[in-house]
Image 1 (cartoon, rainbow, N blue to C red):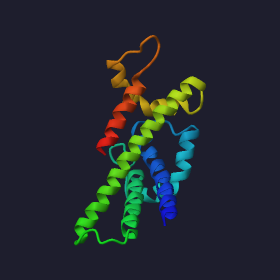
Image 2 (cartoon, helix red, strand yellow; image 1 turned 30 degrees about the vertical axis):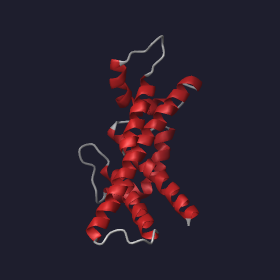
Image 3 (cartoon, rainbow, N blue to C red; image 1 turned 90 degrees about the vertical axis):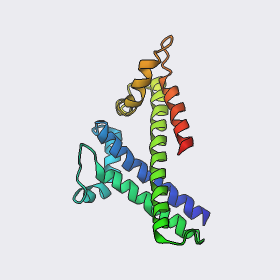
Image 4 (cartoon, helix red, strand yellow; image 1 turned 45 degrees about the horizontal axis):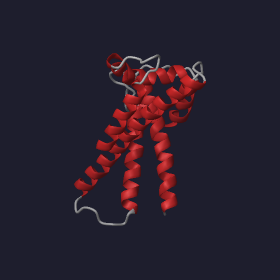
Length: 177
């Protein structure tokens, strides 16, 4: 049973991360023209395109992508709680709120991990291949997090410490989540 839960969690987390990445990329106006954008679009179109007929993009945000990620996390939370086989709560409202909170919390954690991964990837790419096709979209993803820190903490001898500071702040945020 643990192996099934592990595999189910891995697959759901992978697709939720892609849906969240699609939502964030559109919200931050990151280009979908490169390899990263093509990868994300190809693997998420199966759910997002049909959902767009029901859930339109309002305010410049791709709500269908976010809804798909939320529904997957909701399904996973419901399956995990149901598979536990233990009566957790007496009424369905409390159970629904608990499953909903688990899904929202999981999405927030995935978003933080997504940004941490992007910051680490940006740092590695800057050392290995700063002209990689992934460098531009990763820079566009991380710029809104790094720019406020860069205004406070300038580069020291040509070394930018802002990614380290942002990763530490995101790790602190994970503790609260």
